[in-house]
Image (tube, rainbow, N blue to C red):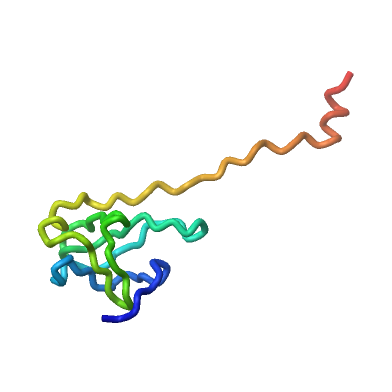
Length: 108
C-alpha cells in the first residue's frame, strides 16, 4: 500500500476499492472547491454503460497514488445515488456606481 495523498491529486481513471478491497469502479469526476480546500466527494463509474454514482467525502477512507478506498462495502456502493453535476456557481456583483457625467445630466 502506498503513502496517503491529498484529494487534490485524484484524477479520472483512478481505481476505486470497496472496504473489502474489491474494485468497484473508477473515478469519473472529483467534486469540491479547490480554492477553499473543500472535498465534497467523487463521481464513480461503476459500469461502462451506467451513470456514475456519487460517493460523499465522508465515505472515502483512504487516498493513495492511483487508488481511492471507500469505507463502504460493495453492497453499499450499489445503493449509492446517481451523481448529479452541480449547477455552475454565479457571482453576483453589486451594480457599479453611476459615472459623474450621468449625475450632472439628471440634476436640475
